[in-house]
Image (tube, rainbow over all chains, first blue to last red; front, side):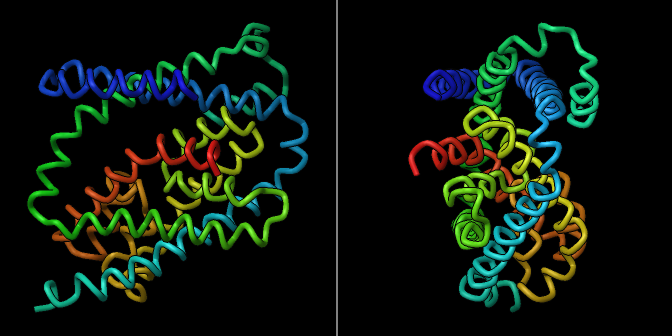
Length: 93
Length: 192
């Protein structure tokens, strides 16, 4: 993971320095989207070639949904507490 | 794109170099570079919002802690996946593209697909259930459920069911969570 973090830091500094160069930032955002599509495509190929994943799709799907429910419910409970403690008086007045 | 890839992979309708080469590793490197630029360019926008309303910082952090804690508890019901892996999947906060690519690279395709499905379903659940969440969990409900997607795809429904004055909080929370994804996911998988 070290090259990834290094590249990201370089990108971060470059982005901060060039933050007012709109064309450059727009290009960078477009490149991000394109590469994400490309990588999703490659992940799709890998999954299609991987028989273990294809034959276990039902279990994998169920696990994914379970994690989502846990994460969403956890966030909702914390959000509810935060809302009651910090937001309600000010916005209900 | 993902589904197209699956179909091509299933029927092995592919040139050899796509299957044998480590093409995705270098694409990931390029991606991280551009994501870094995006974050750097956004840094200014974040500091402005922070100055105006200090307590909205609480919102993305309660989404982070809530998601990770909820996922950690869920991991007791899933024997095949470790607690760190469930937490990493939840740390996508709905940002399915980036998080699933990271997780694939670190933990393999199976967990990558789980991350993809889980985070897509987080977005879908938010789109469908935000009015319900707002009613029973307060005005931050939709923003919390949407995670990173609160700033774009889920913003219209959140703004509609919560009120326009909450849209800025939704965008702020979404931006912070989006920035956290590329740090938090590898961190959880590497160090926990």
